[in-house]
Amino acid sequence: MKWSNRGSSIELNLPHPFSFDECLRFLARSGQEVLHEVGEGEVVKLLKVEGELVLCRVTSTGEALNVAFLNTSPSQCARELVADYMVEWFDLEQDLSGFMEMAGRDPVLKPFAERYEGMRILCIPDLFEALVWAILGQQINLTFAYTLKKRFVERYGESVTFNGSTHWLFPSCERVATLSIDELRELQLTRRKAEYVLDLAKAMERGELSKEALLQLDASAIRENLLAIRGVGAWTADYVRMKCFHDRSAFPVADVGLHLALKEALGLERKPTIEEIEELAINWKGWEAYATFYLWRSLYGEGV
DNA sequence: GGCCAGGCTAGCA
DNA sequence: TGCTAGCATGGC
Figure 1 (cartoon, helix red, strand yellow):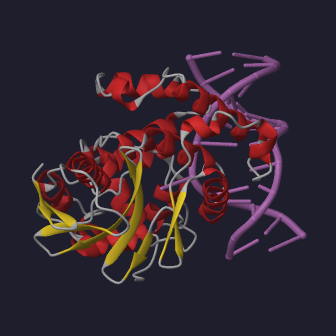
Figure 2: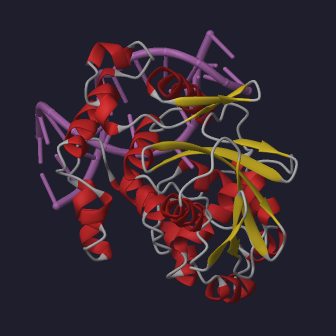
Figure 3: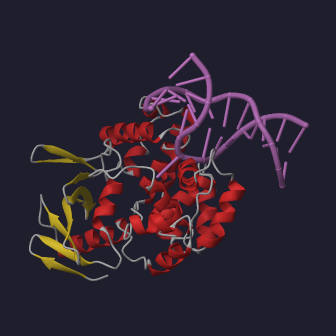
């Protein structure tokens, strides 16, 4: 991936199609989000690279993504890692031409592919964060899931305060591994979820589970390994393949948000059955993750 | 006030 | 192997 220095910022070439505005709308979908702040034409996010907390302001020139460093001037090596993060966060290495072609021929997806053209899956490059976020969100409404994440991050994450506002980093597995079930229960996680998160943190802290190791495997083996984790079922495994492993064929078919989006898209009186969705998805083959993400996008407004 | 939420596990037939 | 009660609480 090409990137270049621009003084106190770096620039990354953007692929086509790419819509920064649509990405920002997704990032702004919850007012309770604590891991980034969306403003007019920009998103600010705290990263930790080479042990240093780097506050980044991301904007787009149309041709390039500009990442300005607000609180520090990172080393060349740290800049490289920031660039890597941005490539993953905005899924910049995905060639969307196949999706655009498929969606253009698909009666369900066509209007959404046109309306949100250039939107990319907003990924969660960090495996621990992706898994914990998925577990937190299981079987509760999204509003409450964001509440839980906010409590979790603000209690156990690192932060930087800049120009009067505080920016948060997702807690590390090392930190979380030191916690007790009761400490997590205080945040109003269920006992089960507290166990899942704690066991996961310990496994990752011990090096028994890592993104680097999983990346050596093929897609089906990655899925098997994720499913072997207690607290990770089919929905979570596919969600994480989609958001962390950039697997465009990952398909969380049981997702209730997907069901609701399809109900509305198809003008049904009830939610579609799994069988009906699988029938529709025959046409989406290879692009199920993007189909799902565009349908999710249809669930919230045009804000920001 | 009741139903539903970006599900999963364990236990039962 | 397949099915489902129980989880546990907030949002609307």
